[in-house]
Amino acid sequence: MRDYEYRLLDAIADNPTVTQAGLASQLGVAVGSVNWYIKRMVAKGYVKATRMQRTRLKYHLTPEGVALLARRTSEYMERSLGVYRKLRRAARAMAAEIQNRGIENVLLRGDGDSADILKLTLLEHGVILTNVTADWVVRCVGSDYRLEMSTVEVELNHSVERDNVRT
Image (cartoon, rainbow, N blue to C red):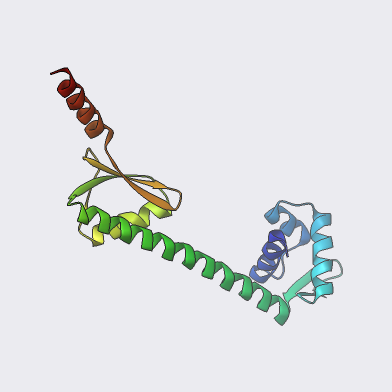
């Protein structure tokens, strides 16, 4: 089943008296497409339409339609929890690596859910997050975390190495 078909079922579940024009607007598709999809959902047994007035219909999800939405929701939650668990394991591993190296504070680079999970995990492990400068930076790269020396520290090390080579 396509995503917009689920969105259609969800919209009908939210408001059984919604019009086809309202559904079309909500889903960003043509009214004719909504009409076609509703007929298809009725034929599959997911939706039932009853007349409210001469030209108005009221849509109801059948038990099969409700079960389909519930399965989809359950699958989405399982996938989401799987992603969360993976990020949480990676964040704990990063916290352990930081502690094993004796690093006390880091600068966090990244945003979004993966950065939030890392931030909370580091705080739980007593790692101090700073907004200014630090010798170490933790970068959120997709669903992975990387610990790197800060560019200021790297530049200082290269400068010291160059000075040592000259003498």
